[in-house]
Amino acid sequence: MSDFKLFPENDVAELINYIGRNGTPRSVRRGETLVSVGEDTGRAFLLCSGSVKCVLPDYRGKERVLAMMFEGELVANYLSSRCGFPSLFSVVAMENVECLEIVIGEHQDFFGHTHNGVLYVRSFVESLAYNHLQKTISLACLSPWERLNRLREKVPDVFQRVNMKDVAAYIGVSPETLSRKLHLQ
Image (cartoon, rainbow, N blue to C red; front, side):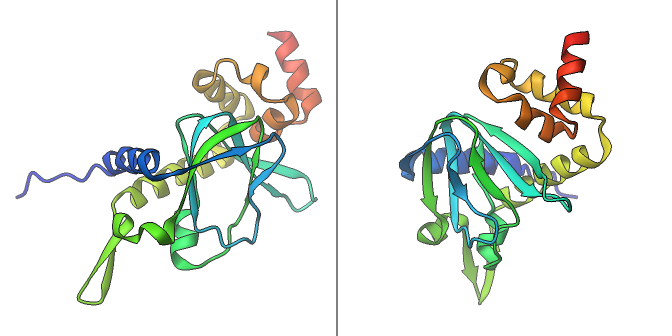
């Protein structure tokens, strides 16, 4: 039996380093969209400063914040761009953002290789998919207050950086409910 273990998160660190070395600097103002729903993205971003939200309107047309990313994190819809599918959500800057951007198609040698006509992709895809699954499960299973606690552990100054409406949409409550909860603490 082999002792080989796959650690896709190691490849995520390599992807972050790769974008750091090869990315094109980009500035995005608060409220601007990096990726629009339905767009063929084909790009990956490394946030150097600032934050973004992944958003999609729900069945009532109300904005639902699916994820928030902050400096040092990746923003990419790699599987959609690899398979030629449109983005399922928009990515919007919550603060002024400085990031590095790469066009995935221009860096195919890094992302995978073809052997005997079969495309093999890097293992970071598995780690990114797992992270996405964790966020989806969090949306479905954690209480709003558990989600808020996790967000505050990750970004202690979140309320100084991001407006309460976005935090409320991320945890799944109204801004008024969030405000009442915070005043009771």
